[in-house]
Image 1 (cartoon, rainbow, N blue to C red):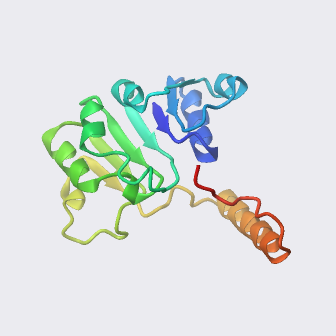
Image 2 (image 1 turned 90 degrees about the vertical axis):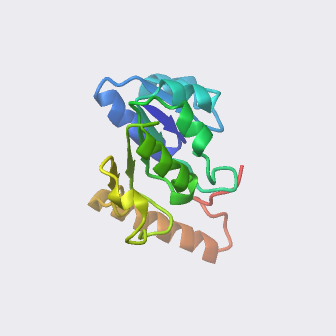
Length: 175
């Protein structure tokens, strides 16, 4: 399994993959520590293309930034194995959906599982909705009691810090 974006969510995905004895590759703008890599059983791919060529499952777990918009397009899809599945749990705009439709229709890749699309919801006549090799879920990847509780707790911590004029603990900054 190849994970693109090895932040908190990417690490959780790696932990689950490790539990199934999967070989874990990852690409991230910043390499994780040796200790993290060992704990997760993950190997760093400096070049994202290498990860795409080697992975049976490519999981996208990146923030949406100008650099990650259309991160996966025709070129990247053509590098993937014909038997590969693309999994997007980040943001819909990270994947060029027109290129994805073509790749799925032509057999360039085997399948896609999308917890996010653009727009959401997709129009009823969108080609992704009629493909038998696509699974689309309505952003349910985080729909657990524990995650919801943690999200509310972080939201309150961030709001309190902002009101007090303190640094916001979970501020997402570009690069």
